[in-house]
Image (cartoon, rainbow, N blue to C red; front, side):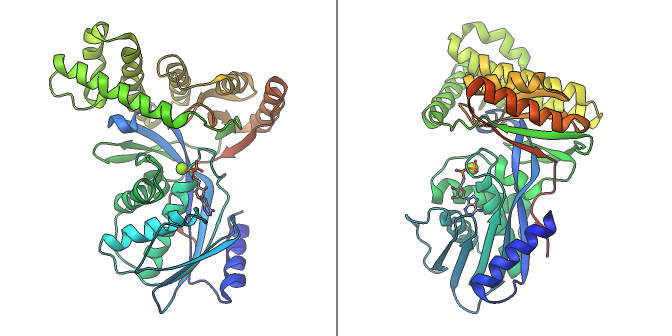
Amino acid sequence: MTQERVKEVTDHFRRVFGSEPQRIVRAPGRVELLGNHTDYNEGFVLPAALDLDVMAAGSLRNDDLVSAYSANFDTLVEFPLSRIEKDLVNTWSNYVRGVLKFLGESGVRLQGVNMAISGNVPVGSGLSSSAAIEMAVGFLMQALVGFEMSGPDLALIGQRAENEFVGVSTGIMDQFVSRLGKKDHALFLDCRTLCYEHVPLETRSIKIVVCDTMKRRGLVDSEYDQRRAQCEEAVRLLSQWIPNVRALRDVSKGDFELYKDRLPEVIRKRAQHVIYENERVLKSREVLNAGDYESFARLLDECHESARDLYEVSCAELDTMVEICRQAPGAMCARLTGAGFGGCTVSLVRDEHVDAFVNAVKTGYAERTGVTPAIYVCTAEDGASIVQ
Ligand code: ADP
Ligand code: MG
């Protein structure tokens, strides 16, 4: 599979640039296993990097020009490193431009480059093809030019590119795990300190299955802003009674239980989701280190209930998908993943039943909704790496 894709991106490079690439790298998409809406509350998240990725093949040039081709968009863009501006036509190239711009601003001496990009992370489904392309481009430049940069720092460059150059506000989780994920592990990340730890998640006997409801996340921006504001309000209120509360991350379950009745109902529900979700992520680190997949699966189920009833970010399609997944052969759990209001669910599924699971969910969801879902059977893989 990887070999085929290496050949494919090499062929694109040869065809477009008429030479062999010096380097090929890959950076994966990701799924949020736990840590729903905890990132902007300075809390904990637990994503895994997947075996879906963006590959980038490249060679340095002797001038200042960047020539970037995306096979997915079948387009070539060119721009000088000395003047990186937003592209209003080929908007995909802004991810490339943004990463190069902020790499340059961070003090790295860049050089012109030819690159071909080819990805199999579904675009816009919530598996973070955007972080994958950012980390592929950043890691390719690092491999070609040979500058020193830590994984977390490259992830921060990607996040900046997305926030400040593309103009999409995201947390640090996606870039971080795309750069620093580890095969057969999930990544535990403290979004406040950026301390992280790999926790074992063996994906030979248990697969990570992502089911796309095909419902696009329409309301997500305004609802997202509203949730953030509600969390800030919860912090403002709780900090009157509990010392040293800067974010919901700082509120313990015990303190929350003492003061929750003083909160307006909606604010209480939002805070409760975040505070207990942080606890679930901490707990997941314990149970995965002990190899207890049953308990891990229960935490994912609880996360869905909480996201649906307390944070209210589910929708009919996601709830239907979760219900169908939970009843399908081999299923250990199911929850919505990502921002909500559409997008994907994630399940853990026993490998020997995975084909039956996929069939049951495909038919079941089509019968209930009239829509055929896209389903991705995944393993946990390494973050960005050099493949050639
Ligand atoms: P998601 O990250 O959930 O897949 P986003 O809307 O955040 O969705 O990012 C998708 C965008 O990332 C695409 O519209 C495109 O601009 C860019 N992108 C992702 N993969 C590629 C690729 N292989 N080639 C070019 N651009 C890509
Ligand atoms: Mg994205």
